[in-house]
Image 1 (cartoon, rainbow, N blue to C red):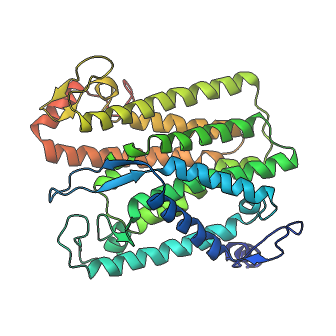
Image 2 (cartoon, rainbow, N blue to C red; image 1 turned 180 degrees about the vertical axis):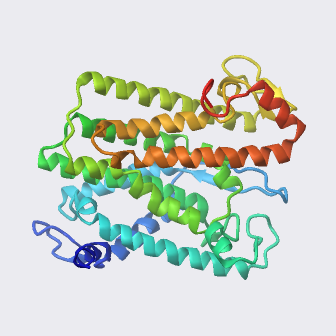
Image 3 (tube, rainbow, N blue to C red; image 1 turned 45 degrees about the vertical axis):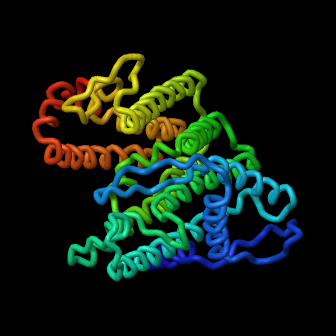
Length: 384
């Protein structure tokens, strides 16, 4: 009981993040206000800043949404504004690292509230479009968890696309705050730099290719409920940074050879992950576009069996797993804690791969059976 009493106060939001005493703004800033300001900025930037408008997938009612992919510009502007705020002394670069548990609890509570709002708004919807038509199973838990509407909007903002953007940017800002704390403490060694570099590359690359997100399963087919809201706003920024938090409290000295090996794993994972997703995106837009300089091999006129997709049916998952592993390797092997993310991802992707296989088998039938014969490996060639 005493241990619980010591831990619980750290997990409950205090409602404030104190600006350092050296700041000219000797005020207390509520974390809720900070969160809403962050989300408000992203909503405004998403609507105002220029960006490529990408057509979404064709929905069952033949309609399609349109996405303004200006995430990179929104991120760069926010980074500039944050750097200016730190320079002027209006905010501390370590404020997130100092108030991490409080911020986590605030965002978790926010995610729960948003999920209930989505549920009750969804079941009352009378829209007939594929995006807003309610899908009610009769089970409150299932509908709250998985969502009721496919693409709910709030004040013109597509919430599903918006929350993914918010979570990915939050991942980077948490890492930057952790790096600032490590740097100020004099502990920013090779392990810290490699981890920060890999994550920053991945996140910035995500926003460079943000339009690829519009053709993913989450955007096309998953409804927006607690599962996705929590995943985007809580799970991505706070579990993907476990390695950073761990390195903040544990010093790991990597040899140059180990660092180079880690870099190779990251680059291979990146090439496979980005290459496979790009090939899939291009194929959906133009089924005749060449793959690796050759006309694509297509099964039944629907399934791509060229490039990475001719090596394994879910080759992009292999790239994702290698990237996740590269994020954890800078932490060494003295603890399993930094390997939570790649372990979780392995379980998730195998489960998702099995679900995808069942769905595709039912949808494509003989075409899928022919594709499986042509491409027998699921994720890792000659292993699985």
